[in-house]
Amino acid sequence: MIDPIARLLGTWSANITVYSVILRFVLSLLLGALIGSERATKMHEAGLKTFIIVSLTCTIATLIDVMISISSSIGCIPIVTAASIIGTAILGSNTILFSSKNRIKGLTTSGALCACGLLGASFGAGFYTIGLIGFIVVICCLSFSRSFETFIKDRSNHFEAHLELKDRGSLKEFVSTIRKLGLKIDDIEYNPAYANSGLSVYSMAFKIESPELKKYKTHKEIIEAIRTLDYVYYIEEMN
Image (cartoon, rainbow, N blue to C red):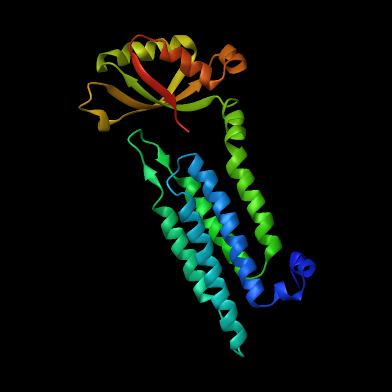
């Protein structure tokens, strides 16, 4: 089956020619750069150059496998492509970090790197339609998922927060105040990373029990209300 876009462009794009190879590299570079730019503008761990290199590497690997398959009468198992995808997965795993706020960071970037590698492999194999549709889906997910995620989270009765109290003795009063506000603490974990800062720092899981809070208040508004307490040094919702 010939790729629909390749059919429109002509048979030269479906076969391995100098021009089709150039086209595959150009598409891989441009779309990898666009995904990398989206990550870079949001100050994530992997940026423009990393995404370009990952995309081009997988394109090269797939082209090598295609050329080996063409030159071999018995066909070829795509070993080089598989190795490049595994390498991309390993690289992506190194972008996952555990921050001092007990928050795992870099999961989305790691997934985006793997997706970018597969897009590069698609172009290398001459599957232009899969690559372009896949790119549109990936870039839309990266660009618009945060707003949708916030919309969903604000309708949840559960949320987690990073809390910094001015002293440890304020914890009892904080718990009492939280209950009066209509919240319940489901889990609390002391963060030793701030032991010498003079602050008492925790990761907390809250449940909204008050019907009024559930109906009229977003998580952001609840966080802002907690922030006004005198003994709260800092608080933010954990994503």
